[in-house]
Figure (spheres, rainbow, N blue to C red):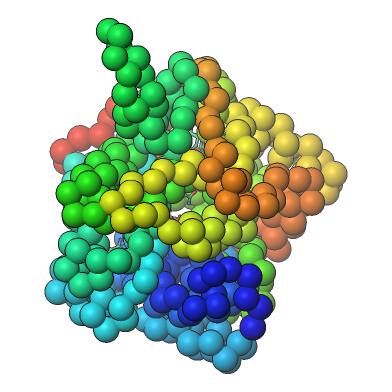
Length: 404
Ligand code: NAD
Ligand code: USQ
Protein backbone atom coordinates (compact mmCIF):
# COMPACT_ATOMS: atom_id res chain seq x y z
CA UNK A 1 0.00 0.00 0.00
CA UNK A 2 1.01 3.61 -0.57
CA UNK A 3 2.88 5.01 2.42
CA UNK A 4 2.86 8.77 2.34
CA UNK A 5 2.86 9.66 6.01
CA UNK A 6 4.74 8.78 9.17
CA UNK A 7 1.56 7.29 10.55
CA UNK A 8 1.05 4.91 7.68
CA UNK A 9 4.46 3.32 7.98
CA UNK A 10 4.01 2.53 11.67
CA UNK A 11 0.34 1.47 11.35
CA UNK A 12 -1.00 3.94 13.82
CA UNK A 13 -4.38 3.06 15.26
CA UNK A 14 -7.01 5.75 14.76
CA UNK A 15 -10.42 5.73 16.42
CA UNK A 16 -12.91 7.74 14.34
CA UNK A 17 -15.78 8.83 16.58
CA UNK A 18 -18.75 9.82 14.41
CA UNK A 19 -17.38 7.65 11.60
CA UNK A 20 -20.84 6.99 10.11
CA UNK A 21 -21.43 10.71 9.46
CA UNK A 22 -20.64 13.01 6.53
CA UNK A 23 -17.08 14.02 7.45
CA UNK A 24 -16.36 10.92 9.54
CA UNK A 25 -17.22 8.29 6.91
CA UNK A 26 -15.06 9.97 4.27
CA UNK A 27 -12.22 10.31 6.79
CA UNK A 28 -12.43 6.71 8.06
CA UNK A 29 -12.08 5.35 4.50
CA UNK A 30 -9.30 7.78 3.63
CA UNK A 31 -7.25 6.82 6.70
CA UNK A 32 -7.90 3.10 6.11
CA UNK A 33 -6.71 3.48 2.51
CA UNK A 34 -3.57 5.28 3.72
CA UNK A 35 -2.64 2.31 5.89
CA UNK A 36 -3.90 3.39 9.30
CA UNK A 37 -5.73 0.83 11.40
CA UNK A 38 -9.21 2.33 11.79
CA UNK A 39 -12.08 1.76 14.20
CA UNK A 40 -15.39 3.58 13.85
CA UNK A 41 -17.32 4.53 16.99
CA UNK A 42 -20.84 5.81 16.33
CA UNK A 43 -24.28 5.44 17.91
CA UNK A 44 -26.00 6.07 14.53
CA UNK A 45 -28.05 8.90 16.05
CA UNK A 46 -27.68 11.02 12.92
CA UNK A 47 -29.79 8.45 11.07
CA UNK A 48 -32.36 8.66 13.89
CA UNK A 49 -32.58 12.49 13.62
CA UNK A 50 -33.57 12.02 9.96
CA UNK A 51 -36.24 9.49 10.90
CA UNK A 52 -37.60 11.72 13.64
CA UNK A 53 -37.73 14.88 11.51
CA UNK A 54 -38.82 13.14 8.30
CA UNK A 55 -35.63 14.04 6.42
CA UNK A 56 -33.35 12.05 4.13
CA UNK A 57 -29.93 12.37 2.57
CA UNK A 58 -30.01 13.29 -1.15
CA UNK A 59 -27.99 10.15 -1.75
CA UNK A 60 -29.21 6.74 -0.63
CA UNK A 61 -26.78 5.54 2.04
CA UNK A 62 -26.09 1.94 3.01
CA UNK A 63 -26.12 0.72 6.58
CA UNK A 64 -22.80 1.09 8.40
CA UNK A 65 -22.46 -2.71 8.36
CA UNK A 66 -22.84 -2.94 4.58
CA UNK A 67 -20.52 0.02 4.12
CA UNK A 68 -17.76 -1.67 6.11
CA UNK A 69 -18.31 -5.07 4.43
CA UNK A 70 -18.14 -3.46 1.00
CA UNK A 71 -14.91 -1.65 1.92
CA UNK A 72 -13.38 -4.95 3.04
CA UNK A 73 -14.43 -6.74 -0.14
CA UNK A 74 -13.01 -3.97 -2.36
CA UNK A 75 -9.74 -3.31 -0.53
CA UNK A 76 -9.14 -6.22 1.84
CA UNK A 77 -8.98 -3.70 4.69
CA UNK A 78 -10.76 -4.19 7.99
CA UNK A 79 -12.51 -1.37 9.83
CA UNK A 80 -13.59 -2.24 13.35
CA UNK A 81 -17.01 -1.03 14.48
CA UNK A 82 -18.17 -0.05 17.96
CA UNK A 83 -21.83 0.95 17.97
CA UNK A 84 -22.63 2.98 21.07
CA UNK A 85 -22.98 6.36 22.70
CA UNK A 86 -19.80 8.08 23.89
CA UNK A 87 -21.86 9.78 26.59
CA UNK A 88 -21.93 6.32 28.23
CA UNK A 89 -18.49 6.07 29.76
CA UNK A 90 -18.52 2.28 30.23
CA UNK A 91 -19.08 1.77 26.51
CA UNK A 92 -16.35 4.25 25.56
CA UNK A 93 -13.94 2.73 28.09
CA UNK A 94 -14.44 -0.76 26.62
CA UNK A 95 -13.86 0.57 23.09
CA UNK A 96 -10.64 2.28 24.26
CA UNK A 97 -9.35 -0.80 26.10
CA UNK A 98 -10.11 -3.09 23.21
CA UNK A 99 -8.79 -0.91 20.34
CA UNK A 100 -5.98 1.02 22.12
CA UNK A 101 -5.99 4.05 19.80
CA UNK A 102 -2.88 6.15 19.11
CA UNK A 103 -5.12 8.95 17.88
CA UNK A 104 -8.81 9.71 18.30
CA UNK A 105 -10.56 11.85 15.69
CA UNK A 106 -13.71 13.14 17.31
CA UNK A 107 -16.50 14.03 14.85
CA UNK A 108 -19.24 12.50 17.03
CA UNK A 109 -21.45 15.44 17.93
CA UNK A 110 -24.84 16.94 17.08
CA UNK A 111 -23.59 19.39 14.48
CA UNK A 112 -26.57 21.37 13.21
CA UNK A 113 -27.09 24.93 14.45
CA UNK A 114 -30.79 24.92 13.44
CA UNK A 115 -31.36 21.55 15.20
CA UNK A 116 -29.99 23.05 18.42
CA UNK A 117 -32.42 25.97 18.08
CA UNK A 118 -35.64 23.94 17.54
CA UNK A 119 -36.72 23.86 21.19
CA UNK A 120 -35.39 23.61 24.73
CA UNK A 121 -35.02 19.85 24.65
CA UNK A 122 -32.92 19.92 21.44
CA UNK A 123 -30.78 22.75 22.86
CA UNK A 124 -30.16 20.77 26.04
CA UNK A 125 -29.58 17.55 24.10
CA UNK A 126 -27.00 19.25 21.86
CA UNK A 127 -24.96 20.68 24.71
CA UNK A 128 -25.24 17.51 26.82
CA UNK A 129 -24.32 15.20 23.94
CA UNK A 130 -21.42 17.32 22.74
CA UNK A 131 -19.95 18.54 26.02
CA UNK A 132 -20.34 15.28 28.01
CA UNK A 133 -19.23 13.16 25.04
CA UNK A 134 -16.02 15.18 24.72
CA UNK A 135 -15.44 15.12 28.50
CA UNK A 136 -15.74 11.32 28.41
CA UNK A 137 -13.19 11.14 25.58
CA UNK A 138 -10.80 13.26 27.66
CA UNK A 139 -11.27 10.99 30.70
CA UNK A 140 -10.81 7.86 28.55
CA UNK A 141 -7.51 9.21 27.21
CA UNK A 142 -6.30 10.10 30.72
CA UNK A 143 -7.35 6.75 32.17
CA UNK A 144 -6.40 4.29 29.43
CA UNK A 145 -4.23 5.89 26.77
CA UNK A 146 -2.28 8.90 28.04
CA UNK A 147 -0.16 9.28 24.90
CA UNK A 148 -3.17 9.23 22.57
CA UNK A 149 -3.53 12.40 20.45
CA UNK A 150 -7.02 13.93 20.42
CA UNK A 151 -7.97 15.48 17.09
CA UNK A 152 -11.22 17.27 17.84
CA UNK A 153 -13.53 18.86 15.30
CA UNK A 154 -14.33 22.38 16.39
CA UNK A 155 -15.82 25.10 14.24
CA UNK A 156 -14.90 28.50 12.82
CA UNK A 157 -18.24 29.62 14.28
CA UNK A 158 -16.64 29.61 17.74
CA UNK A 159 -15.08 32.97 16.86
CA UNK A 160 -18.22 34.63 15.51
CA UNK A 161 -17.68 37.65 13.28
CA UNK A 162 -15.47 40.13 15.18
CA UNK A 163 -14.47 43.40 13.55
CA UNK A 164 -10.76 42.42 13.64
CA UNK A 165 -8.76 39.63 11.97
CA UNK A 166 -9.39 36.15 13.37
CA UNK A 167 -6.21 34.36 14.49
CA UNK A 168 -5.69 30.61 14.88
CA UNK A 169 -6.85 29.98 18.42
CA UNK A 170 -4.77 32.59 20.24
CA UNK A 171 -4.21 36.35 20.11
CA UNK A 172 -1.38 38.36 21.61
CA UNK A 173 -2.72 41.38 23.47
CA UNK A 174 -0.97 44.28 25.15
CA UNK A 175 -3.12 45.72 27.93
CA UNK A 176 -2.06 48.50 30.33
CA UNK A 177 1.54 47.96 29.32
CA UNK A 178 1.63 44.17 29.83
CA UNK A 179 1.51 41.55 27.07
CA UNK A 180 0.11 38.02 27.00
CA UNK A 181 -0.99 35.45 24.43
CA UNK A 182 -4.57 34.51 25.26
CA UNK A 183 -7.34 32.34 23.81
CA UNK A 184 -8.99 34.24 20.95
CA UNK A 185 -12.38 35.64 22.11
CA UNK A 186 -15.35 33.37 21.39
CA UNK A 187 -18.70 34.77 20.23
CA UNK A 188 -20.71 31.80 19.01
CA UNK A 189 -24.28 32.33 17.81
CA UNK A 190 -26.25 29.12 18.33
CA UNK A 191 -26.50 26.58 21.15
CA UNK A 192 -24.64 24.18 18.81
CA UNK A 193 -21.76 26.58 18.09
CA UNK A 194 -21.61 27.35 21.83
CA UNK A 195 -21.22 23.62 22.59
CA UNK A 196 -17.97 23.74 20.62
CA UNK A 197 -16.76 26.70 22.70
CA UNK A 198 -17.46 24.73 25.88
CA UNK A 199 -15.57 21.74 24.42
CA UNK A 200 -12.58 23.92 23.58
CA UNK A 201 -12.41 25.21 27.13
CA UNK A 202 -12.61 21.70 28.60
CA UNK A 203 -9.92 20.41 26.25
CA UNK A 204 -7.60 23.38 26.91
CA UNK A 205 -7.95 22.83 30.66
CA UNK A 206 -7.17 19.09 30.51
CA UNK A 207 -4.14 19.69 28.30
CA UNK A 208 -2.82 21.99 31.00
CA UNK A 209 -3.92 19.95 34.01
CA UNK A 210 -3.25 16.39 32.77
CA UNK A 211 -0.82 16.84 29.89
CA UNK A 212 -3.28 15.66 27.23
CA UNK A 213 -2.13 16.32 23.65
CA UNK A 214 -4.89 17.84 21.52
CA UNK A 215 -5.56 19.56 18.22
CA UNK A 216 -8.77 21.56 17.85
CA UNK A 217 -9.66 21.78 14.15
CA UNK A 218 -11.84 24.86 13.80
CA UNK A 219 -13.42 23.77 10.58
CA UNK A 220 -15.38 26.00 8.21
CA UNK A 221 -18.45 24.90 6.25
CA UNK A 222 -17.77 21.70 4.26
CA UNK A 223 -19.05 21.19 0.69
CA UNK A 224 -18.92 18.38 -1.84
CA UNK A 225 -19.68 14.71 -1.58
CA UNK A 226 -17.20 12.59 -3.50
CA UNK A 227 -13.83 11.55 -2.17
CA UNK A 228 -11.59 9.01 -3.94
CA UNK A 229 -12.70 6.26 -1.58
CA UNK A 230 -16.46 6.95 -1.33
CA UNK A 231 -16.62 7.13 -5.15
CA UNK A 232 -15.40 3.53 -5.44
CA UNK A 233 -18.83 1.88 -5.05
CA UNK A 234 -22.47 2.89 -4.60
CA UNK A 235 -22.52 1.23 -1.19
CA UNK A 236 -19.72 3.58 -0.09
CA UNK A 237 -21.54 6.76 -1.21
CA UNK A 238 -21.53 9.52 1.41
CA UNK A 239 -24.59 11.32 2.75
CA UNK A 240 -25.49 14.74 1.30
CA UNK A 241 -27.87 16.86 3.38
CA UNK A 242 -29.91 19.53 1.62
CA UNK A 243 -32.79 20.12 4.07
CA UNK A 244 -33.28 23.30 6.11
CA UNK A 245 -32.01 21.71 9.33
CA UNK A 246 -28.88 19.73 8.37
CA UNK A 247 -28.10 21.04 4.87
CA UNK A 248 -25.28 23.59 4.68
CA UNK A 249 -24.99 26.59 2.39
CA UNK A 250 -23.20 25.53 -0.82
CA UNK A 251 -24.47 21.93 -0.82
CA UNK A 252 -28.01 23.25 -0.42
CA UNK A 253 -27.62 25.73 -3.26
CA UNK A 254 -26.45 23.02 -5.67
CA UNK A 255 -29.41 20.78 -4.85
CA UNK A 256 -31.78 23.75 -5.06
CA UNK A 257 -30.41 24.64 -8.51
CA UNK A 258 -30.82 21.02 -9.65
CA UNK A 259 -34.52 20.89 -8.74
CA UNK A 260 -35.36 24.43 -9.91
CA UNK A 261 -35.91 25.80 -6.40
CA UNK A 262 -34.74 29.41 -6.00
CA UNK A 263 -31.53 29.69 -3.96
CA UNK A 264 -32.34 30.52 -0.35
CA UNK A 265 -30.19 33.49 0.61
CA UNK A 266 -30.98 34.42 4.22
CA UNK A 267 -31.28 38.15 4.91
CA UNK A 268 -28.83 40.45 3.14
CA UNK A 269 -26.52 37.56 2.18
CA UNK A 270 -23.32 39.29 3.30
CA UNK A 271 -22.71 36.52 5.88
CA UNK A 272 -19.14 35.44 5.20
CA UNK A 273 -17.64 32.13 6.37
CA UNK A 274 -14.65 29.91 5.66
CA UNK A 275 -15.41 26.95 3.35
CA UNK A 276 -13.59 23.79 2.29
CA UNK A 277 -14.02 20.77 0.02
CA UNK A 278 -14.67 17.46 1.81
CA UNK A 279 -11.53 16.13 0.06
CA UNK A 280 -9.62 18.69 2.13
CA UNK A 281 -11.39 17.70 5.35
CA UNK A 282 -9.94 14.20 5.04
CA UNK A 283 -6.54 15.59 4.09
CA UNK A 284 -6.44 18.05 7.02
CA UNK A 285 -7.33 15.34 9.53
CA UNK A 286 -4.62 13.08 8.11
CA UNK A 287 -2.10 15.94 8.41
CA UNK A 288 -3.08 16.58 12.04
CA UNK A 289 -2.68 12.88 12.91
CA UNK A 290 0.65 12.54 11.14
CA UNK A 291 2.01 15.59 13.04
CA UNK A 292 0.71 15.15 16.60
CA UNK A 293 0.53 17.87 19.22
CA UNK A 294 3.05 17.64 22.07
CA UNK A 295 1.98 16.35 25.51
CA UNK A 296 0.20 19.23 27.25
CA UNK A 297 -0.17 21.20 24.04
CA UNK A 298 -3.59 22.57 23.03
CA UNK A 299 -3.09 23.32 19.35
CA UNK A 300 -5.69 25.13 17.26
CA UNK A 301 -5.85 25.07 13.45
CA UNK A 302 -8.36 27.02 11.39
CA UNK A 303 -9.48 24.42 8.86
CA UNK A 304 -10.84 26.07 5.73
CA UNK A 305 -9.41 27.06 2.36
CA UNK A 306 -11.46 30.04 1.09
CA UNK A 307 -13.91 32.65 2.38
CA UNK A 308 -17.21 33.38 0.64
CA UNK A 309 -20.32 35.38 1.43
CA UNK A 310 -23.69 33.72 0.86
CA UNK A 311 -24.31 36.15 -2.04
CA UNK A 312 -21.00 35.13 -3.65
CA UNK A 313 -21.94 31.45 -3.40
CA UNK A 314 -25.35 32.13 -4.93
CA UNK A 315 -23.69 33.98 -7.82
CA UNK A 316 -21.24 31.11 -8.42
CA UNK A 317 -24.00 28.49 -8.44
CA UNK A 318 -26.18 30.64 -10.72
CA UNK A 319 -23.34 30.91 -13.23
CA UNK A 320 -22.35 27.24 -13.08
CA UNK A 321 -26.00 26.17 -13.34
CA UNK A 322 -26.48 28.38 -16.38
CA UNK A 323 -23.65 26.56 -18.16
CA UNK A 324 -25.48 23.27 -17.58
CA UNK A 325 -28.73 24.71 -18.92
CA UNK A 326 -30.35 25.21 -15.50
CA UNK A 327 -32.20 28.45 -14.95
CA UNK A 328 -31.21 29.45 -11.43
CA UNK A 329 -33.08 32.14 -9.49
CA UNK A 330 -32.49 33.50 -6.01
CA UNK A 331 -35.08 34.30 -3.38
CA UNK A 332 -34.38 36.52 -0.40
CA UNK A 333 -35.57 34.63 2.68
CA UNK A 334 -36.13 36.58 5.91
CA UNK A 335 -33.20 35.47 8.04
CA UNK A 336 -34.35 32.76 10.49
CA UNK A 337 -31.11 33.27 12.45
CA UNK A 338 -29.73 36.11 14.53
CA UNK A 339 -26.38 36.94 12.91
CA UNK A 340 -24.55 39.87 11.28
CA UNK A 341 -25.55 40.10 7.62
CA UNK A 342 -22.86 42.60 6.62
CA UNK A 343 -19.55 42.41 8.43
CA UNK A 344 -15.77 42.38 8.27
CA UNK A 345 -14.27 38.88 7.96
CA UNK A 346 -10.62 37.95 7.63
CA UNK A 347 -9.58 34.68 9.26
CA UNK A 348 -6.03 33.29 9.30
CA UNK A 349 -5.61 29.74 8.05
CA UNK A 350 -1.91 29.09 7.55
CA UNK A 351 -1.00 26.33 10.00
CA UNK A 352 -2.38 23.39 7.97
CA UNK A 353 -0.75 24.82 4.84
CA UNK A 354 2.58 24.95 6.69
CA UNK A 355 2.17 21.22 7.38
CA UNK A 356 1.58 20.46 3.69
CA UNK A 357 -2.13 20.94 2.87
CA UNK A 358 -2.65 20.98 -0.92
CA UNK A 359 -6.10 22.57 -1.20
CA UNK A 360 -8.84 21.75 -3.68
CA UNK A 361 -10.15 25.27 -4.23
CA UNK A 362 -13.74 25.79 -5.35
CA UNK A 363 -13.58 25.52 -9.12
CA UNK A 364 -15.97 25.44 -12.06
CA UNK A 365 -15.34 21.72 -12.40
CA UNK A 366 -16.26 20.98 -8.76
CA UNK A 367 -19.43 23.05 -9.07
CA UNK A 368 -20.24 21.22 -12.32
CA UNK A 369 -19.75 17.86 -10.71
CA UNK A 370 -21.72 18.74 -7.56
CA UNK A 371 -24.54 20.12 -9.74
CA UNK A 372 -24.51 17.04 -11.98
CA UNK A 373 -24.49 14.82 -8.91
CA UNK A 374 -27.52 16.71 -7.58
CA UNK A 375 -29.30 16.39 -10.94
CA UNK A 376 -28.59 12.63 -10.91
CA UNK A 377 -30.46 12.23 -7.59
CA UNK A 378 -32.99 15.03 -7.98
CA UNK A 379 -36.00 12.68 -7.96
CA UNK A 380 -35.17 11.90 -4.34
CA UNK A 381 -35.51 15.55 -3.28
CA UNK A 382 -38.43 16.44 -1.03
CA UNK A 383 -38.85 20.13 -1.88
CA UNK A 384 -40.95 20.66 1.28
CA UNK A 385 -37.76 20.22 3.31
CA UNK A 386 -35.87 23.04 1.61
CA UNK A 387 -37.17 26.23 3.26
CA UNK A 388 -35.81 26.92 6.75
CA UNK A 389 -38.25 26.09 9.55
CA UNK A 390 -36.28 26.93 12.70
CA UNK A 391 -36.27 30.47 14.09
CA UNK A 392 -33.59 31.66 16.51
CA UNK A 393 -36.07 34.10 18.05
CA UNK A 394 -39.06 31.78 18.37
CA UNK A 395 -37.29 28.97 20.24
CA UNK A 396 -39.25 28.08 23.35
CA UNK A 397 -39.38 25.55 26.14
CA UNK A 398 -42.32 23.71 24.59
CA UNK A 399 -41.35 20.57 22.63
CA UNK A 400 -41.73 21.31 18.92
CA UNK A 401 -42.66 18.70 16.35
CA UNK A 402 -41.89 19.10 12.67
CA UNK A 403 -45.51 19.62 11.78
CA UNK A 404 -46.09 22.23 14.51
P1 NAD B 1 -22.78 14.22 10.98
O1 NAD B 1 -23.96 14.49 11.80
O2 NAD B 1 -22.96 13.79 9.56
O3 NAD B 1 -21.89 13.09 11.72
C1 NAD B 1 -21.72 13.03 13.10
C2 NAD B 1 -21.73 11.57 13.52
O4 NAD B 1 -21.54 11.47 14.93
C3 NAD B 1 -23.06 10.88 13.20
O5 NAD B 1 -22.84 9.69 12.48
C4 NAD B 1 -23.67 10.62 14.58
O6 NAD B 1 -24.46 9.44 14.62
C5 NAD B 1 -22.44 10.53 15.47
N1 NAD B 1 -22.69 10.89 16.89
C6 NAD B 1 -23.28 12.00 17.37
N2 NAD B 1 -23.35 11.97 18.71
C7 NAD B 1 -22.77 10.80 19.09
C8 NAD B 1 -22.55 10.18 20.36
N3 NAD B 1 -22.96 10.74 21.50
N4 NAD B 1 -21.93 8.98 20.40
C9 NAD B 1 -21.53 8.37 19.25
N5 NAD B 1 -21.71 8.92 18.02
C10 NAD B 1 -22.33 10.12 17.95
O7 NAD B 1 -21.84 15.51 11.05
P2 NAD B 1 -20.63 15.96 10.09
O8 NAD B 1 -21.14 16.95 9.14
O9 NAD B 1 -19.90 14.78 9.61
O10 NAD B 1 -19.73 16.72 11.15
C11 NAD B 1 -18.75 16.02 11.89
C12 NAD B 1 -18.04 16.95 12.85
O11 NAD B 1 -17.42 18.01 12.12
C13 NAD B 1 -18.98 17.61 13.85
O12 NAD B 1 -18.33 17.70 15.10
C14 NAD B 1 -19.20 18.99 13.27
O13 NAD B 1 -19.48 19.90 14.29
C15 NAD B 1 -17.88 19.27 12.60
N6 NAD B 1 -18.02 20.21 11.48
C16 NAD B 1 -18.83 19.91 10.41
C17 NAD B 1 -18.95 20.82 9.36
C18 NAD B 1 -19.83 20.58 8.14
O14 NAD B 1 -19.96 21.50 7.32
N7 NAD B 1 -20.43 19.41 7.99
C19 NAD B 1 -18.22 22.02 9.41
C20 NAD B 1 -17.41 22.29 10.51
C21 NAD B 1 -17.32 21.38 11.55
N1 USQ C 1 -27.33 30.33 4.87
C1 USQ C 1 -28.12 30.93 3.92
N2 USQ C 1 -28.97 30.14 3.21
C2 USQ C 1 -29.07 28.79 3.39
C3 USQ C 1 -28.25 28.18 4.36
C4 USQ C 1 -27.39 28.98 5.08
O1 USQ C 1 -28.05 32.14 3.70
O2 USQ C 1 -29.89 28.15 2.71
C5 USQ C 1 -26.37 31.14 5.65
C6 USQ C 1 -26.55 31.06 7.15
O3 USQ C 1 -27.48 32.02 7.61
C7 USQ C 1 -25.14 31.29 7.66
C8 USQ C 1 -24.26 30.70 6.56
O4 USQ C 1 -25.09 30.61 5.40
O5 USQ C 1 -24.87 32.65 7.72
C9 USQ C 1 -23.71 29.33 6.90
O6 USQ C 1 -24.78 28.49 7.28
P1 USQ C 1 -24.67 26.90 7.16
O7 USQ C 1 -25.99 26.31 7.51
O8 USQ C 1 -24.07 26.53 5.87
O9 USQ C 1 -23.56 26.57 8.26
P2 USQ C 1 -23.58 26.65 9.84
O10 USQ C 1 -24.92 26.74 10.43
O11 USQ C 1 -22.60 27.68 10.25
O12 USQ C 1 -23.05 25.20 10.25
C10 USQ C 1 -22.21 24.40 9.39
C11 USQ C 1 -22.18 22.99 10.00
C12 USQ C 1 -21.57 23.06 11.39
C13 USQ C 1 -20.21 23.73 11.31
C14 USQ C 1 -20.28 25.10 10.63
C15 USQ C 1 -18.92 25.69 10.34
O13 USQ C 1 -23.50 22.46 10.07
O14 USQ C 1 -21.44 21.75 11.92
O15 USQ C 1 -19.69 23.89 12.60
O16 USQ C 1 -20.91 24.93 9.34
S1 USQ C 1 -18.88 27.44 10.59
O17 USQ C 1 -19.95 28.03 9.80
O18 USQ C 1 -17.61 27.90 10.16
O19 USQ C 1 -19.10 27.67 12.00
